[in-house]
Every structure is written in structure tokens, then in C-alpha cells.
Amino acid sequence: RHLLQAGAALGGGLVGWSARDLTHDRGAEPADAAPAPAYGGEREPFHGRHQSGIVTPPQAHALVLGLDLRSGVDRAGLARMMRLLSDDVARLSQGRPALADTLGELAVLPARLTATFGFGPRVVAELVPPRHRFDFAELPDFATDRLRPQWGQTDLVVQLCADDPVTLAHTRRVLLRDARVFARVRWTQEGFRRARGAEPAGTTMRNLMGQVDGTVNLSERDRDHDRLLWSDLPGLGGGTFLVLRRIAMDLVDWESLSRSTREHTIGRRLSDGAPLTGGAEHDAPDPHAVDDRGLPVLDRAAHVLRAQPQKPDERFLRRPYNYTRDEADPALAPDGVEAGLLFVAFAADPVAQFVPVQQRLAEQDRLNEWVTTIGSGVWAVPGGCSPEDGDYVGRELLG
Ligand code: HEM
Image (cartoon, rainbow, N blue to C red; front, side):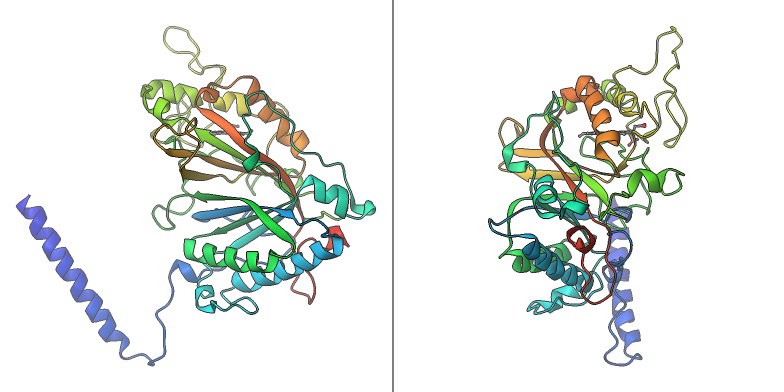
């Protein structure tokens, strides 16, 4: 213990000394040279064929905004709003203040800011011109859903992600300022992963049940990636669909289970996410494996077996975030804190790719005993926009 204390004292001293030393060294640089920003200075492109925030490696924080258009806002109004918001994000994502940004100092660290905009079924049915309109319905009801209207389908979704929560707060502020006359916020869903840099880049995230979550996912290395992710519907080229499910977890009950029960619920190990049938995280589970008594290792109702594609197209990109919420619904939060997963998925055709999987999970999945879907929505996500003057997200679809 003494040694540890001495070490801590020495460590503290050393840190203090080296910091002073660094400050000293900088005296040799031009007086106005700012220290190079760390992660805060990193940028994701805003312009391009696809919107960012989809294949972007997930940032640490997310703010997902559900907005409804104000009554009387027509196609021209929506286009005006999208032009303003696109311009805001084009600037903020590159570390520049938005137009008339009176808090411009908050814009200098974009921290890989991305914004992903989507239009709900009502907008597509009523505001998209007939030549670009497509069949687009809300998600069907699933037997295990316990939906709360407060987290329901909205006209618009804006998924903001960044490695820094101050950047997100400022971005939300700017976007809502410019959206205010056209739309009002129905809900905001805040999500998080581990802090940027807390673990090596590329580490699969853990959800709040403690599981490694996201191992088997649609990857850019997959030969069907583009076909399964990007839509080719008229007006939606380079776009996709975003599904958001707000799923509350019963952590009190979950924590009372044995480790083995928890692992069999999913079919993978808690320690490293490897299949219970052996191997490492990225190995596939063997559904036919038996133990030394000849009994199947994997429960047929284990989450990974139920979620596995039964047809090659039943795959999508999962990009979830953890969430917690105080003052939550007491039915969902015996300790006063609701915890869960903002399950975000992207697919070129959610009806063919997402719905059958969700249907199968609703029919049978051991996980259902500890998770409850309380919010749900689906939005068409237009392709990206170009830096050309006057281009904006959604122009092709609305034009
Ligand atoms: C796999 C957790 C909801 C679809 C997994 C895995 C975990 C997990 C731990 C194994 C690691 C991995 O491959 O990612 C959860 C939790 C959920 C949830 C805690 C709710 C709170 C859902 C939902 C869907 C879904 C709603 C889709 C409707 C999948 C898929 C896989 C998967 C497709 C990969 C299956 C495969 O091995 O091919 N999930 N999940 N999950 N989950 Fe979930």
C-alpha cells in the first residue's frame, strides 16, 4: 500500500512536471499557434453520394430527434427547411460556425459530427411529388411491442452523432433554431457508447446488459453490402431507410440470473462475445453442436439463432446506442432509471430485410423476457447532397 501511495505521489509529480515542461517548450512556437486538437478536430465529410452517419464508424454520442411538420408546411416549406439544415451541417461538421451562429466558439470542434435526415411515411405520401412517391407504410405491429405514443413515428428524423456531447448540444441548438417555423420536436432520444479513445478503434460495443453487441453486422467488405444498404428507388438514389426501435431492458431481473442463463439467452459468451459453441468473437455459432451428454449447446430460441437470416436478404446494418433515462416510467424502471438500447438499423428495403427478422424475434426469442420495445419508427433517408450551390439533402426526392 505504501509503495502504491509513493508511486501515485511520484506519478502525480511527474505529470505536473511534464505538463509545465510542455508549456515551456511551446514558448518556442509562434505565439498564436494553438495546440493541435485531439479527437475534437476530426471531421467526417458532409457532402457525398450518401448521407453520413450510416457507414460512419459510430461516434461516442448520439441525439436522435423526432420532428413533426407544423400544419400548413408544404413541399416548398420542407425544401426550405432542408436547405437551411443542410447548410448548417455542411458548416458545423467541418468545424465552421453556421450562418448567424451567435455561439460560433462552440463550432470549432466538430468531433466527427454527422447528421442523417429521414422522412416519415406521411411526408412521402403527402409531400413527395407523384413521380418519386413509393409505397411506404409505418412498421407493422409486432406481438411483443408495448409502444408508448411518446416515442412513436414522426414526420422527420434527424440522427446527430459526434464524439463530443458539447458539439451535439450546439448542433441541436442551431438546427432547432432554423427548423422552428417549419417543425416541432416530438421527442429526443439520447444515446451513448464508450468514450472515444477509451478502447481501441473497431472494438465491438457493449450494451447495458453487458453483452458484446454488433459482432455479426453488414460490412462494407460484404459483396451484397451496397445492394442491401443503398436504395435505388426513384428520387432516393444513394439513400436508404432508417428503423429506430427504443427497447427498454429489465436490468433488475437480468442481474439476478446466473451467468450461464444470461449467456444462453443470447448464445454467446459475456466475456468476449464468442459463440457458446467455441471459437473467438467473429466465429459463427454452430447450431448443431452438442455437449458431452448429447444435448444441443445452443437453445433454439437463443437470440442469435432467431435473429440469423433465414433468407440471404434478411440482413441490415445495425448501428445502436445505449440509453438511460431518469424519471422514467415506473413499470420499466424499478430503480427510477430506465436503461435500454436505441436500436438503429439501416436497410435498402426494411419490409424485406428487417420486418421478417423482427417478426421472428417477436414470435420467439429468449431475450424477450428482459426487453420491451416501447418506441418504433421508420424513415426514408435520401441520398447525400453535393457542395454545389443550392443543393441540399432531399432535393432530388422533393424536386
Ligand atoms: C445479435 C443483443 C435487439 C437483430 C445480437 C447479439 C447480441 C444482441 C448480444 C450477439 C452479438 C452480435 O452479433 O451482435 C440484442 C439486445 C437487443 C437486441 C440486447 C435488445 C435490447 C435486436 C433486434 C433485432 C436484432 C430488435 C432485429 C429485429 C440482431 C441480429 C444479430 C443480433 C441480426 C446477428 C445475428 C447473427 O448472428 O446473424 N443481438 N439485440 N437484435 N441481433 Fe440483437
